[in-house]
Image 1 (cartoon, rainbow, N blue to C red):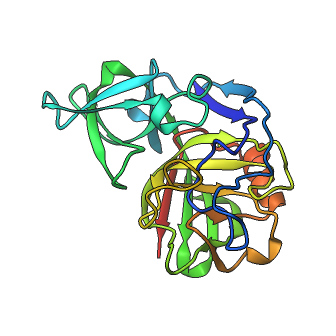
Image 2 (tube, rainbow, N blue to C red; image 1 turned 45 degrees about the vertical axis):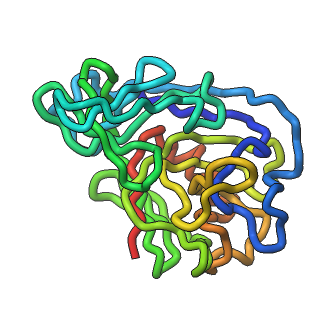
Image 3 (tube, rainbow, N blue to C red; image 1 turned 180 degrees about the horizontal axis):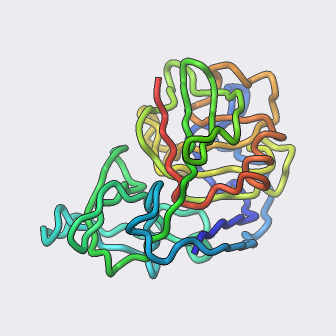
Length: 257
């Protein structure tokens, strides 16, 4: 299954790293709505046997937690709990990007600190699907590009983190998609939460400092280093990314200089 989840969440609970600009108080996320999260889920089939499929593999846990090991048949490393890494854990699948696959095991990128942490799980503990989509962010060019295989299907200028609160490079994946209650607020109409965290902020707005891709209420911030680490798109661009491109949860996001 390819699952795309939109949770209409009060973003007072969404603690993406410094997605606001310097003029906003650190504890403010979207205008203070107390709207309860209401998910809207759509799904389309992907190949059920992903072994020969080109592109990236996505692993979905069957429940609300997944025990991860240090190596195939290795020691227990940690347990990733949906409640610890998702804004609406009971209504969003717990997904991961696969780094490597071997002999009944898969190595997963984990949405935990430090950035780049990986771990192994038995393949039988997850459901594997695939995607040929990939998001590429080039910091020096202030650009975000989506490719489908070898084809460029989406491009946009972006805003990035300030020098003292940089957008971190690395390989990440989309862990959740949220629809703020105020489409004209700080996060715009949509916000993707990534698996990475701010390299300099331990917390933000009362929670962990998650890196996100989202819209903005400040169009002048596009093409500039102004955020606390998040990636900003114009509102029409993030809307097209969600409604036209339709990135599935687990889509790889590569951030480079």
